[in-house]
Structures are given as structure tokens and as C-alpha cells.
Length: 176
Image 1 (tube, rainbow, N blue to C red):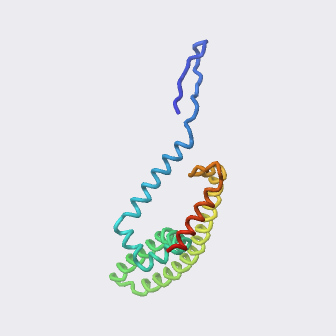
Image 2: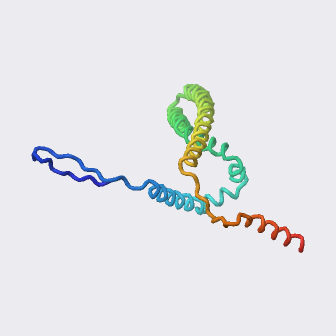
Image 3: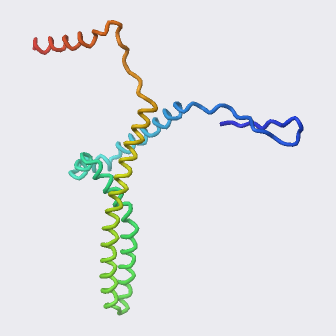
């Protein structure tokens, strides 16, 4: 949006003159085009293609809610697992100095703490995935309500076009 500063008649201050906002449908089409190019580049990646051909990839392709839950869980559990591995490395270094009992205690407590955190994160990831799915359904329903799809075909004035096509298809099936 372009704004122009126009001096007031008194010459003391300025006032803002605004132009009309650009068309939102043009912006939505441009955004849709960019998103489709991004999705296409991800789907054509050789690593993604190899993963999608594996048994796990095909299972997650058939179960999108499970795929979203696994993705959210992996992303959210990266930090606690990283901290746990850091503690393991640091206590292993301390073990070389001679504190073997402390290492066992810290790794045991850390392992139990990690187990509790991962159980909590699994519940949170299920909740977040459910929220994302519900939000997606609501937003797509609202977008379809606000911007209904336009019909792609023109209808004939006679209205019997579809019946004629169906009867021609059926005649072709019976002749074969």
C-alpha cells in the first residue's frame, strides 16, 4: 500500500492520504502458487521419495494424524533428549576422574526424569496435533464458505446433457 504525505493548508503538519488496498484474491492466488511450488519441491526431493517408498513412509501416508503426532513429538522431544545426552557426556567425563557412583545416580535420575518428560510431551504432542487438525478443518471450512469454488464447466441450455452423456457411456459398455 502506497501512502502519500500531503501538506495541510496551514503548512504546519501533514495528513495521510491512503489509496485503496490491493485485491485480496490476487494475493491469495500468489500465495497459493508459492505454496504449491514449495510442496512440489519437497515432494520431488530424493530423500523424501526414498522415505515415502519405505514401509514407515507408506504407513504415515495412510495415517496423517499419526504422522503429525510423530512430527510434533520428535520436534518437542529434541531439547530434553539433547539435555539428557549432554548430562550423560558430562557425567561420563566426571567418571574418568573417579566419580563412578555419582554417574550412575545422575544417569538413573536423568533417565527417569527424561521418561517423565517424554510421557508428558507425548500427551502434549497429541493435544497440539488435535488442535492443529481441528484448526485446519475450521479454517478450510471458513475459506470454502467465504470463497466458494466457482463451477469449472458451462452448462448447456437444455439441461439433458449429463443424461445424454450417461446413456452414451452405458451404451458403450453394453456394446463391448
